Image (cartoon, rainbow over all chains, first blue to last red; front, side):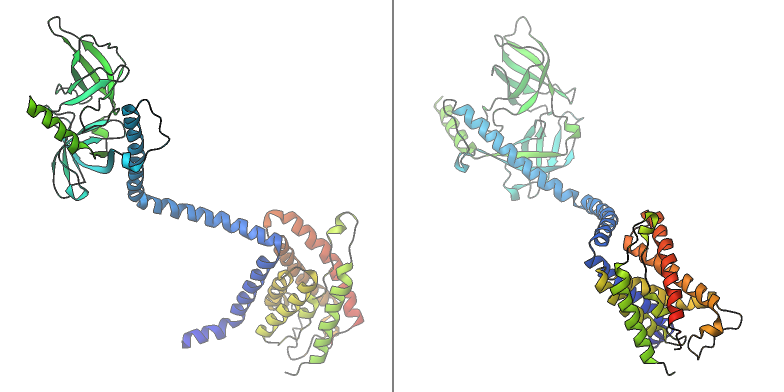
Length: 279
Length: 173
């Protein structure tokens, strides 16, 4: 305190000078238009630059939250599109302006891939959603590029997904242009292609056709992209095509996925079981 | 430290009135001369006694500057320039100090210090004051050429008026 007083005594006039100049400049900037404009412009140049840098840095730290929110947003959009597509497919003679929430059949839960394999004979990925988020065994998993796999086991916070690159994976796929359908299996060689078997002999197949999910199972809704036909062949004694499908979705580079909850799954399984009982 | 307060106050009123009532209306409309303005109010600060405490000098500059600003509608510009000039008055006095030195207890005695001293003191003071003033007025050194032009032309006329002023009223305190 004594030092402060000494300082003021010694440099008092200089401090007063600075104080008066600050007051003057404050008055100049506040009450004179042109100087005020120049001041604002100059400080904007400076603070704008600084703000930009700070924003960039804080953006970087916020990326995870932004990613998550975008993922949720994507899930919502995907949900709307898929449900609309499914609904209009099932009710072709009617047109609907918008979907009622009671009509929504599929819900999408966004998840992050925490672990994955794609070079083994049986490949799995781990997602960071478990039964806490009401994930159940048998739910389908897709990414933004296409199909990923089916949930095989669930823990509290995680679930294990049997990918389409699995020796036991059987997924119903259809050719988009004509709806002929078969079963997708993995030939255990190339992580970027699967084989469509049991495609009827009379189906029209051509290289480049898009293969989508058929929607016959409740696991995947109708119309999710799988891949394009790269090659096809038929043995003379067989009655079905064997079609090579190049996957849209490169599982090795996928980081996020959406788990599909079907609201009508139980009902559908129930009625299908009744049918098989009678047989 | 007895200052002649009446004389100081009188000079304030006189210089201030001359500035805002007369010289404010003077405009030269001939070529480069249109850049010139006459500013005599800094003379008040110049002629304040030697030994006046510096804080008082600064506040005096602020008051005179703000008063002029009210009439010029240039809020704060004259004040900041005059506070600056008041602050550097000591340095200017030291630069132009004559061989015989200042008699610090006495008021400015122009007969003793000489008319040349007076001219160099006022010119240097006005130069720095006007340069600061026009810089703040333009508020950007992008227009350095214009600032210099205004400073030089205004300096010519202002010094002349200040010189005449001291012939009419010989300040004794």
